Image 1: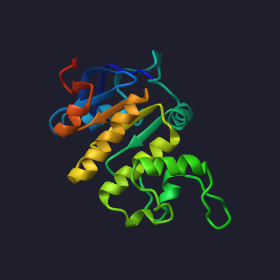
Image 2: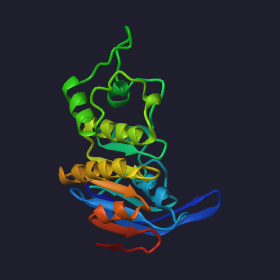
Image 3: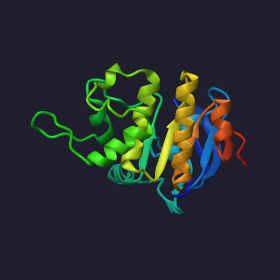
Image 4: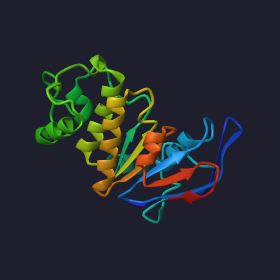
Length: 217
């Protein structure tokens, strides 16, 4: 799915964060949102993912203006198309690895429901196979990042919104996360990454300098 921002402006607490920002994020490639700290990378990512409203301008998905989506329409978009890998990982520490992937459980005995084959495949791809029943709180930061990616793989999301995916990761986890994101894009998905990591940026197909109002390749 093509995700676009057209001349969007956003102010937070009265302070302008984005001013006339435009970007096109195409399916099948990975787009990096780059810029100095405080430039608005994460704000732009959140606007594209409909997590944050814009004050001016438009957000389009496959050419359709979704700027004024209602709360129920946004929830439907998140449910049907989007997956988010944010800096706090969105992981529930008190739940199992498997539950964090499928987000489904039976009422009796908290047994995991959902597609077991898809669950296993997503954990295999992220190197977490065999740890389905562990509490997510036992995982390291890098493992939690991979767990968040397992959820996106399991969901088979059309659009993946990622915020600083390699921040504070060691070399092994960094390389694994970059490969997983690259593979996601190769499968025809739209991958949008807010990052300051040069290795992550080098792996992207398109680079948008936040604040420049231009997309470079």
